[in-house]
Amino acid sequence: MYKKTFDRKSQVWISDYTLSLLLFTLAVIISIKILINSFAVNTAFVGLKADAAKISEILLSEGYPPYWDNGNSSDIIRLGLLTGERLSESKLIRVMNASYINYTSLRPKLQTKYDFVAVIEKPNGSLIEFNNLCVIGRPNSIADCTNPVLNLPDYDNLVKLTRLVIYNSTITKMVVYVWNT
Amino acid sequence: MRKAQVATEFMLMVGLAMIVIFAFLAVIYVLISDYYEEKNMKKLEDLGYSIQNELILAAEVEPGYERTIIIPDQVGGVGYSLSQTANDLIIRYRQTDFLFPIPSVNGALDKGTNVIRHCSYETININLICS
Image (cartoon, rainbow over all chains, first blue to last red; front, side):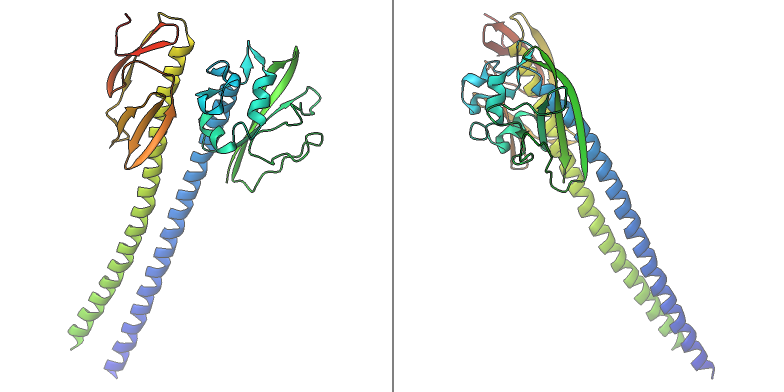
């Protein structure tokens, strides 16, 4: 009689212990996962914001060499769209043309690892076309320049940054979208 | 007999707990080391871009420009090597090369204090006096 009671107690204790250990492990794993995820998202978003500012800053410079649009894309050290503090049509045509510089080569020139798209907008919101092209960055992000709908992949974070710039004696907007997947 | 049974159960439970703890620690170690590896690479990339920006700035401004920069021995506690070709700065970290295009310069960058000078049209000297 005594022996039977002892066995039963022992079994109950082991199952309690195992269950509590499993629950504890599960709780710790979930907490760590939540911590890591929240940490990663915040870091990514801060990085995205910084990169969006950097991309717009670089684009709104002359670039180096200043007249890089006269040479090959391999000679570009830093890419900028201005000449004499105005948007240069020649530079825009080059940078939007994937056969001149492709997207993979473009990102390091703008010092970013994130995906991005930049467009030039008129004051009324329509896009300015340069040789029927209107997008700097990820190809096929806008299928039709006359009907600008952004076609972006599923992203975790997206940053939009707008800056004013002069083109053809008119104030236009350069809009930069940067995202991570 | 009863004491032996308790001891076996105790060892079994401690063993189980140890296995769980070790597995858990291994997972955390992998996650943390991946995170720090990525962070180190990001820091080295930022260092490369900073040096690239310094050299571009020196090339863009008028002759007479001089600036002293300090390149750290380690970044985030990890070592790396620095070298350059005619138009590229190369940062190597654990068999990974980061390439940063730079304007053509005379002289070489090294860890520690470096003096960048814009001597005359398209002549950038690093750690060299303008002639």
